[in-house]
Image (cartoon, rainbow, N blue to C red):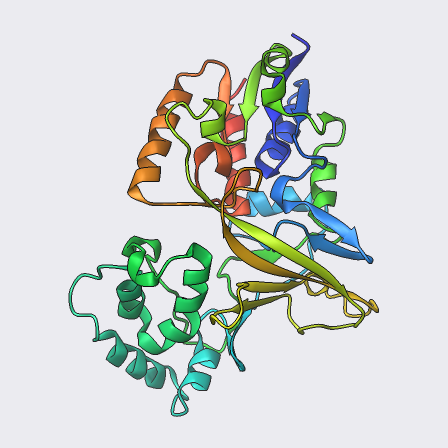
Amino acid sequence: MKYDYLIVGSGLFGATCANLLNKKGKKVLVIDRRNHIGGNIYTENIEGINVHKYGAHIFHTDYKDVWDYVNSFVVFNRYTNSPIARIGNEVYNLPFNMNTFSKIWEDVFTPEDALRHIEEEKKEITGEPKNLEEQAISLVGRTIYEKLIKGYTEKQWNRDCKDLPAFIIKRLPVRLTYDNNYFNDKYQGVPIGGYTKLIEKMLEGIEVRLNTNFFDDREELSSLANKIIYTGPIDEYFNYSLGELEWRSLKFDTKVFDKVNYQGNAVVNYTGKEVDYTRVIEHKHFEFDTTSPKTVVTFEYPSDYKDGMEKYYTVNDVKNNELANKYKELASKEENVIFGGRLAEYKYYDMDDVIKSAFNTIEGLE
C-alpha cells in the first residue's frame, strides 16, 4: 500500500480529514473528479473579485475549536450576514425582525405591536397543520407568509406550498429586535482572499489529483491505500443498487457589470413570482470591496436535479429518508471505508458542522 488513506473528494470534509491525518503523520492521497479543490465552497477570482462559484457561503459557528481551526489557516473578516428580501418593488429585512414588521404594518413600533399582529393572524390555523402553507401561517401569520415565504419556497421546491409537507418548516425565527444579523452564532465571517485559499492551506504538503473520478478506476485507486474516506454520493458508491436518492439542484447565471455597485448588498432574496430566480448574489460585498470599477453578480435559479448537475439539497421526505437509511446500513458493513459529508450522509450540513464531524471522525482513527 502506497498511502494510509485515500480521500475521495476535496471539499470541506475531505480537506479537514486530510489535514488532520497529515498532522498525525499519515500518508494521504486526495482525489477529486472536478478540476479544482474545495468542492462547493470553491471561490474563483473574476475581475479581482472572489466569486462564490457554487452559491453564497458565509461561515458561522458557536464552536470555538472550529473557529480557531479555520483561522489558523487564513484570516476571516467580520462579514455579518444581513440579507434583504425583495417582492415586486417592496424591500424587507431578513430574518423577520422589528425592521421587517414596522415596514409591513404601519402601526408597529414596539415588540408588543408586532406580536399583536402575528398572534392574531396565527389564529387562522386551528388544528394540526396539514401542509407547509398551514405550518408557516401557524408560526408567523398569513401576511409574512405571503410576502416572504410562499413565492420563495415554491420556486425553491417547484411545488405549491399546499403540496409540501409541514415538517419542512419546523420553525421560523421571529426576532423582536432591530437587529439584521441573520445568524445567532458567536463567530461569523468570510475568509479574506476566498475559500479556495483556505482549502489550499489545509491541503499543503498533501498529494492531490484533480480530474480523477474514483469510479473510473475504482479498483486500482482503492488498492493504493489501507483505508478510504469517501465523501461522494452514497447511492453512487453502491451503484444505485437500491435506487437513486433525490436532490434539488441550482443553476447559476453569473454576469460582470461595468459598475461599482449593483444592489448594495451581498445577498438579496426574491420572494415573489415576478422573477424566476430566488437570490441575487453580489460577491464583492462579502469582502467589503466597493472600490473595484466592475462587479460580479450571480442570479440563482432552483432546478430539478438532472444527470450531470450538482447535488445541493436533499429531498427530506419519507421515501428518500428511508432509502438513505438503507444505504447507510450498507455503508456500515463496508470494511476500511468511512463515509462522511453531506453527499455521503445524505444530510444538509452547515460548514462548521462539516468540520466538527471531520474532527470526530479523525479522532476515532489510529
